Length: 299
Length: 220
Image 1 (cartoon, chains in turn red, yellow):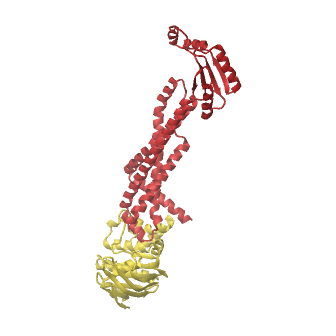
Image 2 (image 1 turned 90 degrees about the vertical axis):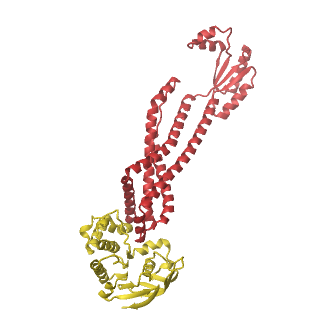
Image 3 (image 1 turned 180 degrees about the vertical axis):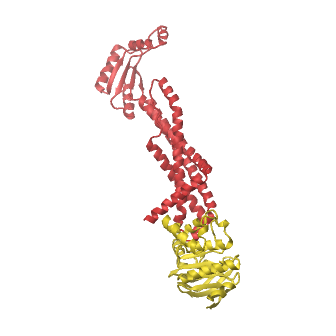
């Protein structure tokens, strides 16, 4: 057991030595791996943040029922009665005159509205449904549209659904991107290890001749690949973090313009660890592929 | 310890390097394999070290039939051997000491013990004061002695050498021979492929004479 442990420590040391022996090469490899991992993780962080924005602005789901312009008081009270009966959740009535008054209070609108010959706004009910599942909302909207003198039912969750669909596409894109870049990482490691094997052909040959097992010869390369990948992952986290810092202020201002408040979230410590682990795993894979193909040709 | 029976080796190109070679070497023996170049000495060396497999017959080392050996078992078999190659196969990118440390790293000896043993091996071949040098800075005789130090550092039961005096001046060759003899005297089985007549005269050892791939003589 201690021999096993010592050999792993020795292999790790050797891998570290090789990393530091060619600092420029190592830096370039880390740069490539870092960028390859940074792009999909930046995409992931962006999607994560977008989801936050969506969550903060659509906290309350609303269904608006707009009456027809020619709806009478009787029609309105009929809808009110139906609502009372249906108990869809909280609801309130917005009379067309109240709506006009509110609109007049908005800056710049007063003039426009006084110039209008008559009130263009309909009476409206704003319902905050108790059940906010998309299907339930759809069902409600359908029911409301069927009532008489209801001109239009607006489901405020529609845009949320569109946004969700957009997020799904984003997620898929990021996943595809991640797959491509993962392949790139494997390829980079594959090639680095190939060059190392060629450079160390003499040592590998001698080691094999004097009793080294395949595992002994492969071990330092595996460690090298995994280490390089893990460091590349950390480098990627650094890039994403730096990008996030640069973007935080302008994004904050932008969201503030829309009246929201929003803190750009970067990678969590867990996220950084996952990134390093993914890098290590892909690096290991690249090393394994390279070693299994190239070692046979040596010695 | 080593037993060859009806060993033949034919290369794919059709060259028959060895034909029907049989011999026994008992533990602790010192045996020379001689013959002109091309007689099959190096081929026999490669078969004994399990670098190649015979195309017919069988070689048994330490009770293990080399032809039937699984690939994964070969490294462990090799650790019984101290191998000295014709081209030495030293690593020129590292120090003398690190060259000798390689076999110990392979078996996973702790670093401190490994360094102690490597120094002892270097001492035996008279290179202790050169441990920090790089092999390129050594003379031909010193390089050969370094190769021996690397071969014996694991305390192998069998020393196998292929033309260890090639390219050496007579004095260096004689010094090398003394080293082999010293290992023989402490009980190591020593098998040396050579065509150097000086060596045969010195100890009048057992000689296996090869000619055109056949064993012509086995004489003490």
